[in-house]
Structure formats: C-alpha cells, structure tokens
Length: 484
Image (cartoon, rainbow, N blue to C red; front, top):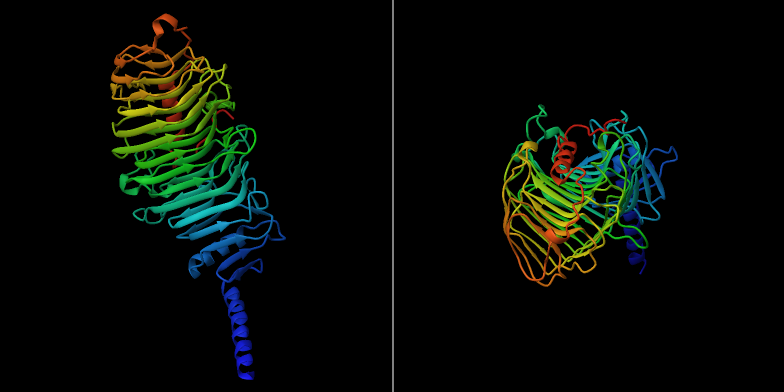
C-alpha cells in the first residue's frame, strides 16, 4: 500500500514539476502561463499586452499548442504577427473579453493588421475587438484581423482563417485611418514593387475563410476576400439580437475582388446605404452592401451564392445598392445564384437598386422578396467601356419565383439595351419590367413603358462600380480617405 501511495505522490510531483518547467520554457513574462496544453495570457499591469500576446502565439507555434486563451477582461495591443499558427486564439466571450488596438501604435505600412496571421489555420473567437485610429502615420490602412500568405516566400500561400463569435467595432466614417474588419489576401509584401503591375496569379492566396456568428460595425470595410484556385469563403449566420443588423454602418460590408473562390453568403443581416462619408469617399463608400469585382488580375472563374440573407437599405443616399457586381479589363466566368433573400428598401433611395449586375451572364435570381422602395430592384446591364468595363452583352439570367407584392419601386426589373435571352418568369406578383433588350418576359409582368416614373440617375451603377474599384484596388498600398 505504501509503495502505491509513494508512486502516486511521485507521479503527481512529476506532473507539477513538468508543467512548471514547460511554463518556464515558454520564455515569456509572468502573465503568460501554460495550463496543460493551453497557453494562457493574463492582462499586463502596464496596460500594453502586445509583448505577452506575441510571445504566447510564438510559443504556441514552437510548442505545438493549439490554444491561446485570454483569461482577463481587457487587453490593449499595438499589433502582433505570427506565422503558421494552427489553433484557437480565444477569449471567454464577446461580453467578457475585450481587446483594443491602441490609437497611433500600429505601423500600418509594415504590419497592415493588428492581429496578423501568415499562413497556418488560425481561429479567432469569443472576444470583442475595438479599433479607431490605429496607424502611427495618420491616414493609414489597417485590418483588425488579417490572414495572409508568407510575406518572405510568396509561393507559400495557403492560409485558412476562422472568425467566430467575435464583435468588431471601429471608429466610424469620420475616423482618418482606413480600417477593415477581416481580410484574407496575398501578403502585401508579395505585390509587385511597381504598383501599376498586377499581382501574379502564382502569388494569390489559397485556402479559405469562415466568418460565423459575428457582428461588425463602424468600419470602412467589414470583410475583404481575395482567394484563388477555388478557395472556400463562408460568411454565415451573422445576425444581431434586437434592432439593427450584424453588418451595419460600414463603407462596404462585404467586398470580394479578383477572386476565384466558392463564396457562400448565407443567413446574414446586412445593412447598406446607412452611413455618410465625406471627402474623396463621399457617395462611394456607405452606399453598397456586397461588392464583387474582377480586373485584369483576376483568375478565370468565380462562384458566388447569396442566399437567405436580409438586406436593409438605410436610405442615407439617393443611390444605394444591396449587391453591385461587375468586371473590368478581363472577361471571366462568374457563376452567381441569389436565392431566398429579403431586400427591404427605403423611400430615400430613388436612383439605386437592390441588385445591380454588370457584364455578367448566366445567373439565377430566385425566391427573393423585394419590399418597399428602390429605383429598381434588379438591374442587368453591360458595362461602360470608357470606364474600363467590358461592355459585353448580358444573357442567360433566370429571374423566377420572386415576390414583388410588397414592392413600391418605380421599376422592379430593368434590362438594358445590351441584354438578351434573359428570362423573367411568371407568377412574381406582376413586377414592373423595363425591357430595352431582347429578353423573354413571361406571364403577368407590367410594362415599364406604362408606369415607369423616370427617376433621375445620380451616378449610375457603372460609374459607381468603377469608382469603388479604384478606391479598393491597389490594396497593397495604403488606402486613404481622400479630402480629410
């Protein structure tokens, strides 16, 4: 019996001693400890937790630990960067763990993200992240969470990022720095030194992104994604309890540029046209809910499914768009499906659209509900070649089984003169259709020639698409809020 007791005591002693040794081997400050396989980080009394969180993430990579846990309530950081982290970077909950990016503390030219993950498979979860004016040089460009390829070896380009149960809050449109909530992209260091050159396809990010059960507000962009070779991007189930939307007061809630990714945008609450910008972004940002663009740097194909989301038009501008998509400089195959969404309009939007599609053929718009006012709910059009767009015929769309019974739009469906062989199906509650092309408008639609009110166009989707692309593109250099 005594031998058994002595053996148990010895095993317990060795276990305690082993954990203590590992904690010392982390090489971090006292606030960073190892509890089993979890690297725990307590808040620093100094008020700056950058060094401790950086050390904890580095130790997790080196030791193969798959969880870094923030055990305190509040943290402050300038910016941390880690390569090849695989596991959870987590707090206790959105309500009880808050990480603030210190104003003026982040070198935005070099780091670009307050939490920067190069390669790996990191998951950020169960916390609130706050950012306002993070850049050490005013007017810089920073993401709160950035998932990037290897900045020192651009051929190593697989990164898979997860963001779940996170609340991200920015300083709003009036802040000087340009801020994005979540970015997945090639490392800025991998873009050509000559900014007029396109990012090579061999340097584009591979992998994917999942954003689930989050809220993002008061930033310039909510989510930016540019993934190649059929990567998977899922933006799902982001909703808000009570009034408002999960994505609100954002310049552009969701932006996808030069991608070849399978994008699934499912069951989200997206507010658009609900914030006013000043200076060079006035009337450009704040107008659009989902923006999807391709340029000459794009891969050859892209896939997007947008389903069962709720869009809410804030009516701040006379021209707002729930979805704006188009092509510039290069034709590619873009498979698009919009199904089961609800678009809630605004009397203030007299010149915009719920869905505006440029230079894109062979899509499906089905089972959506359109409520309230817009100049038009669905617009299919060829782009403007003078603005660098393709100007190609738009064909092969099926607009079927939607509900327009609660629409007060001037025109429900607008098909411009360079559209052909698109089908507007029966039994959609007699939508008002303006067909200037050669399309099949079936059933009980009402001709816009009898009821079109002739709402004036403030800018138009073609010009707005080009201006927004110009503002977003060249993302390897700092985006500036011009005129501020």
